[in-house]
Length: 386
Image (cartoon, one colour):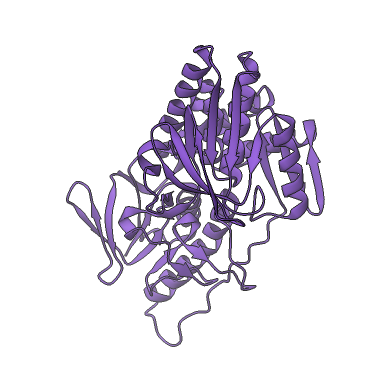
């Protein structure tokens, strides 16, 4: 029997590690990813201001597993009808059970010029591009404007890094930073108290926030916007444009993020989790795309895959076993804003040194949980000195 995990993000790495412990030894386990390293995605924005953090947020995949076969290849297509995976090498993999953890890609919504002119933030290379363009504008000695499209957590963190980078370079008075958000608040999917604290942290750093402002089109030097309540249009020039305005499914999933219910089951033999799916949890709530959701969903997926594998190996007689239900119960949220952070733990919002320490501990705790001890130590140092 062959179990395949596609994607080595938070969901894929956590799922594979748990399956190593729970699957019978006779079951073959394969992890496929186009990179040979695991990237701590929620820390990529730090590279904009602290390139040295790169070593702390990349972990060789081979160091994380004991029995899984790691295949470095891009997944081109997944056929869940025939249980077949097509790789960019032309090879195919057949599976008896699969965890689809291919993550999400940046969504451009077919808006003219956005993909061509907006820099996404999905990789270290993207962050390095943002850093270089920002430094070029700062070093020019001229007035410049940096625009961030999207005020979700990623957009907030990018804007915070850019503002702090400008301050460190002594260019605060010359660099204008603007966040454009189509909805009516920053961090729109999060609690109101958290939103208010994030808004204040951005304002403290001189970042202009334009909510209810949709990006309509981009050229190489300007962005056309629409103010949704009035329909009024406007053109705003820029020197750097970072796009964090949405997520879509991977190419291997035909750009789709399928809806799965609380058991995470997409088909009889495939489970979709993490950002690769739109999960509705056991309480009927839509689960936000986030690292914490990906890690937690992987625990349930591992239990369910193992349950079904054990049942099939025993002959598959009688009724199919009952599967675990995923309930997204997260203790809080945290986001870095330049050299500071905002956290919400239960009903309480925390800022300042306490939030910054909490942010460092969350990242380090995750790395320790996947036995990346050196990277965990390095990340704490980088975060606390950010």
